[in-house]
Length: 199
Image (cartoon, rainbow, N blue to C red):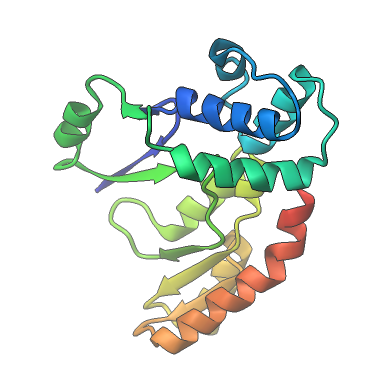
């Protein structure tokens, strides 16, 4: 089975207007004048932290970027589906691809996963190749995404192979839900400080 991974914003959906509305709401709350939607949409495409920095600078505001980003995400969450739409032909393209490939969405914008849990034994590719590809992505946050390998291969050598490939943990099948939940919680907790420092 082929795996096709799509970026969400700008590839499948057009969310620029809602992003601009959230940025303008942030600017107004900060005491600035709203910017033209076109000006803000030209800033979209490299993640929410950079969008917030650019919008604040363009509006002449000197706000704490970390707290402004948190507030922007709240404002965006309130309006993220007001204007956002699938691009023309997206649904038809996905419907045509679905019988021939596994489809996934990877986004680094307002949504950022805290952990990846991947089966190692997937058809035509494997979890090792997936995590190696993730480690080569341009986004530092995505490259450092903590990952857990779930596998029927339970030998000590298999654990070492998973860790060398880029996973932080290796859980043999059959998976105990409590063991998995604890592993996820530990990974998320151990990676929170570094994730916050990257904002």
